[in-house]
Image 1 (cartoon, rainbow, N blue to C red):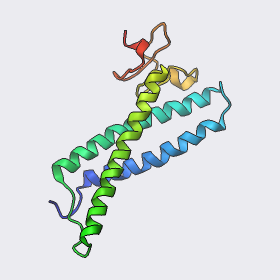
Image 2: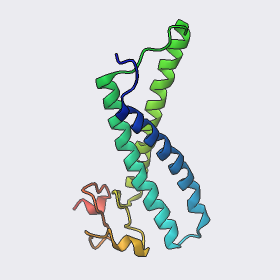
Image 3: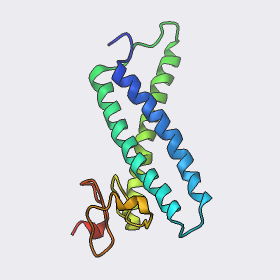
Length: 153
């Protein structure tokens, strides 16, 4: 065990924190625009892209935790407090994994393209930059991740 978390673990911790807060805000930012507005699709593009980034960072964070471990809990804590702290940490990691997985599954089952640049539904001008690959089913993606059933052919 190390006496403190490493700098990479601390950086990922705060990046995950900021992404969770930002994604929460983006969930409600969609309602600022009426249906059919290109800005609404742009909000979803950010939400999906940052959600995939969050998923990747959480996987890296768990990997670093498995490799480097975590600092010892304070000796002043009772056995019950130590156990509760470990359970709370485990539940937090499970939640941080479950929410992006559910988002990925929801997007996939809805039939939408899922990629780092998920602009398949967007007509927003800024999405022209990332439209590098497409098909007749309007599936576009920038990254090799494309989970829309129509894009896999």
